[in-house]
Image 1 (cartoon, rainbow, N blue to C red):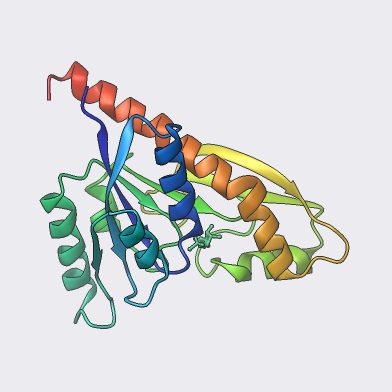
Image 2: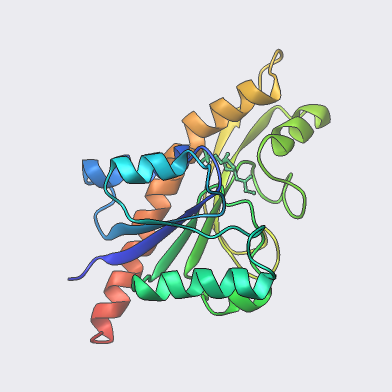
Length: 207
Ligand code: GAR
């Protein structure tokens, strides 16, 4: 059976991309293959990671594109060119329009650094999520992998994992713990689950 073709979309350090690459190399991600990395930012360290592992990448910068439509058209054509079946948002910091998202029902998944429905939605990304969680005084936080729909962080939840919050945490310390103990574990697991499902559907429909 043919593996599900995956595009990973990134904007920054790419530690979640690295977790996916490691899972693929260890055989934990076996039903899907990362065939493209799309970066919203030309200076993203994630691009170095892709290069090191021989994965083709493309930079589509919102700043350079004149409009959201142009930005998304460029992304869509790169996805089409590589025959992508599953999109994984791994720290991709640009918003995708409802029009884009509606073209990929249950084919886009996202990793979010909190236990949805806490600390999610518009404006909640990266360190801000952990700053807010600490300000609120929660004792437990975590990460969520969910399907992407037209509501920011509102799609069906696939996997979640909790992580304790400690007394002397800073946003940076908490971010690192959430990554190490939750994100880098559940994202590859979800990638395998959904890739396997798509691979089987493809087989069922004789694609
Ligand atoms: C990760 O913590 C990811 O959960 C978060 O950005 C970071 C990217 O790190 N994503 C969001 O906040 C999306 N709302 P990485 O580039 O090292 O994977």
